[in-house]
Image 1: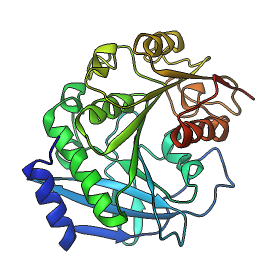
Image 2 (image 1 turned 45 degrees about the vertical axis):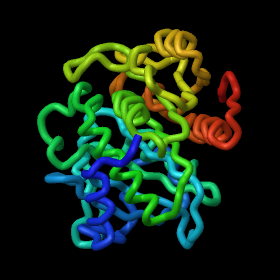
Image 3 (image 1 turned 90 degrees about the horizontal axis):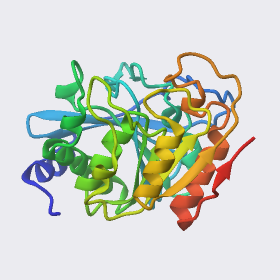
Length: 287
């Protein structure tokens, strides 16, 4: 798929940089108090009459990059990501497992890109139909083009958690030629008020490998383990099963229950990283 006019405008605008602020590290809300120091910055990419903000993270001092992991957090997906007075602000989303555990992906050459909802979708519904729209595809292509312009031609993985899997699978369908693979964690397979979630039909047009990751004890009614396993089988995707938890708390569909892989972040993300590197993943991860 060729870049649209909106993508081209975004890349051109990035050259003069609408907004690119180095900032203090994102305040921690993590199950891992020993997480290493991270280099964080907010980049705001203009697309037509709106913008889309991303949180870019890599190892401090890193200068050469080969891989990008685009992270699509779960509900609400609307973080109002911004920098204020040199401090990064990110409402609602800091506890998401992919956000709080992104440092596990940061091997040599890796950068993570946490993708916020577009500026004109920060209130009201961030609906599944919008996430499946060509407009959203243009937004994500603009982000990938802008990040490649900044860091070089990167090998992209799109990773979504919970409702973020709706964004990740649709973005992967529309963001060729950037994306090389997709990771769906705690896949939303049951309809909610924003839309129908992820089904086998959403895999049509996906030309890259997909890894589906499910927790055996996921208590969230929108992301049942067996349904995710069946989805992987139906679409001939690799399925990674996770069991075990530590210090679980909060709502069933929250970031710190088994739905959010609490206590299993490192083992789970290292298995995902192995798949990104090699195309192989263990069948099971446990304590």
